[in-house]
Length: 382
Image (cartoon, rainbow, N blue to C red):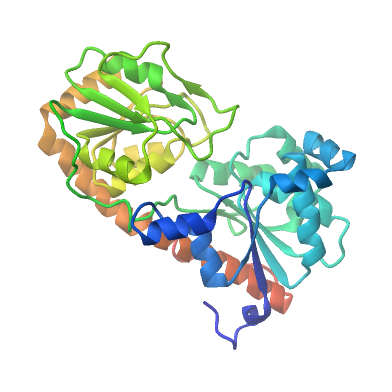
């Protein structure tokens, strides 16, 4: 943290979530060892930041203009209500970190009407969406965003090119998970034969996974839940599961035990450029498990290039079956690569590393705010 002698001592920090989280629940659960910490809470505590979240209570404040803006630009009407409220409370001495473009774009649009504007730092999940990109370009809204954050190199390249911004203002954030919760340990699940683990819903291809394992002498357990899933979440699930495959909800402790008990973690994905599956990838690496992942753009291909995981082509059930059979027949080789992936995770992808990078960016934006200087963020930790 900056000391009282530094410019950011007078800067106020804010964090805007795209959806509502019970962050105190995360914190309390983590303190009991029953779940991972949330990085937003870690940032809040370190920066003494104010948290802003959309709430169903805001629906009573929705006006036709909010509905129109949500339809034309992005987000839900209540996010536009929240943006209005935040801008009423903030000015040039405030730095606002937006957890997604659906939280950030309403602030950027409405700040056009505000003379005493706060500085915006926007995490961008899907830079290829045409409507947000159009508004950022046509209305030059990208000039009101002092730093863009993305989680893969391909997104960084795409956004930098689309907005004609250099990598000095479009930053690559490390994917992360909480090493205080997800770490290697002995699994406790009873096994009669090898166990395959999987999890998540976004862009998952469980139809291909089911086809690959139906004739293998294994059991497959899938944690079929995602904190980011919506009614529009794309996921391929077979109409009938094979007898050796189970899909259900696992609580956090049971899910960690599934990783630890599994011989292999499989992340089977539909062909996408959304960078789906990264959370499960991090959690499995943190638990030192061998990983098979579909070859999609982004971090998956990066891990494949580093020879830390095994990869299969999208929709290739036979290829997935052959890879699983090979790993089960060569457990020493599988575990050696899992050990390499675990060491790489500890160096680059812990939540502490993520928070350190975020703090560096936000504090330098704060410095530029306090001194009325130009932003020149260059995180040394990335």
